[in-house]
Amino acid sequence: MGKKSDTAKAFPYILPVLIVMILINVYPFVRGILNAFYADKVFGVGRHFCGFDNFKELFQDHIFWLGLKNNVIWTLSCVVVEVILGLFIAMLLNLPYIKFRNVHRTLVLLPWAIPPVVSALIWRYFFGTSGPINIILKGIGFSNPPSWLINPGYSLFACIVANIWVGLPFVTVMLLGGLQSLPGDVYEAAEIDGAGIVKKFFYITLPMMKDLILTVAVLTSIWTFNMFDIVFTMTRGGPGNSSILLSLYAYQNAFGYFQQGYAAAIGIISLIILMIPLIFYIKGRFNYED
Image (cartoon, rainbow, N blue to C red; front, side):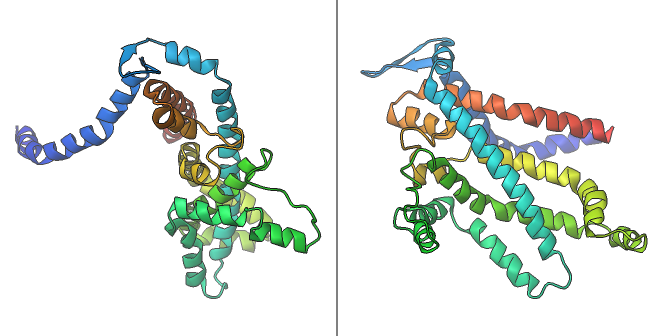
């Protein structure tokens, strides 16, 4: 009885927060799903219910499949490099004999503090035809360096490099926090048994950091898959859709072609794709805890 009374008393204080959450999160989510089943007129104003026609058209759209392929390459490349490089940097910053560790940790965070659009502008300048990267390549003997942002074979690679630079600080800080929480007596015991750096890494650090690394990889995968700012600022998905991503393609349809239903269908497919690894991750976590 007392618990029900306490809940009833607390509900009026919680209600404003619930309303805000519904308006910000739940309503746009539901509205987006409903929009996917409506088609917008190409000429004129109005829309009509079309069922699954948007999805049928989407699966026959070669730009959608190109965007999906680019999304897979984009996400895997960024996440793998960020996790591996982030773990390496975190281990360096965790060494007790590194001088000015606090300064180095602050420098690592700088890319994270810069807005993604600004970072993309910086990297667009670096990868420009007359930018610093090509100047360096010419200086070391490459007489004809590539035009990174206007060559279909290099545009997505340039965006991947920029996104790694933006996302690396988060991964590094998270993994550094995990390394600092590991018990030191385990490493001392391993040293007494004669274990070297390599054995301690593979038999102590990796097994004890496995859950954190997996969590960071899942979070980074979701953010990277949905990333929009970097590619939009650097290449607009070009040239010739060579660097198009699903998020950018959805934006083009919604605000460029005024096909909100088609854009919503792209968003739902993206959500389903992201739910697959997330379900396996949650299932694995629950099985591990049981």
